[in-house]
Image 1 (cartoon, rainbow, N blue to C red):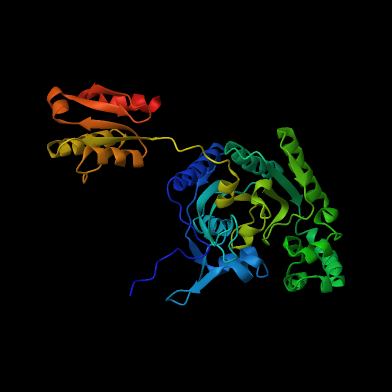
Image 2 (cartoon, one colour):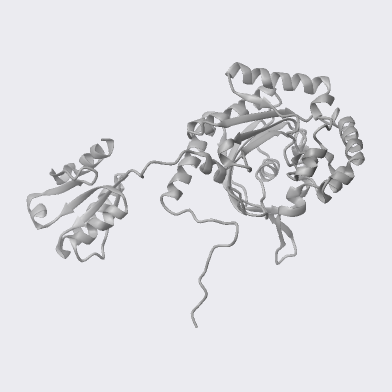
Length: 418
């Protein structure tokens, strides 16, 4: 009886070349841009104590009630695979007593249980920034501008930024009560989830994708109608800073994001090329989260970007170019050791090099070089060893020439530059 074929779990994916290289390119663009803005990388555990996410995201949020991968370990501790980045970063800042203000970025895998869809997986990549200890609305605008610039650098031309303000502790209670009363009058038109949200967190109804709920809240009061003077001024300064930068954006009075810790600024990046699930990412301000997780009163603002959706929205790549690597080809077994020594010498000088030790024929080695998308082959045979030269073949053009053995490193580098 044959063993059943193994397959990856539902909602996960494999990144094989060249998709793995495309993913790494996107991550590299993000890292470079983040560091240009003064952010440093933070790496946190893939799982945290469950309370970290319950306290931050809110007991009534969809993330906590429906989407978390939570489990007990052998010590009977409640743990959760991280569904998002901000709570773990804030926990790490508090626990490690990092100096405030600080600017941090992260790149890594995250986990949410949900129905897999185009660009939506149960294990997914996320890229994020967190600016802690900075209360200025200019920081909100800078982070919004950062995201737009990141998508621009990747060639995503249809990215639209939506911006809103959802108020603060001073003005949100009055709005919350007004919205609650509005929803109670229409509770019969709402789905079961939204009926629960009326009491737990009525703002969450704006996140609901059920069409009946969207229709029911079409005329609902919006957070911006209830902003206090400080929140109004903060929002106006955010928009003013975006206008000075010439960034295209639109107001969305119902943009509340799906997590309880946000206050004041919320924003989202939309791409029409993604279809119904059109969000590339988003973020907002969270001035109370550090305090709620046991730290000092500390303002914060951040952004999280979905890696898979970004890859979907980015333009298709041209045929992969040959890599900056050399493939050392030996003609007879007498030259195999010399091929290995040359590959080691190239690597020691920072040049990627590879040898097919198991090939019996030269033709097979050239096929291996082509499969590896090497830029060139360096051929070693008895004649080359006797003359103190190597034959260098450019695999893009087919041109082949002899190069003195002590000049091969520079010749390979010059070929890479071409």
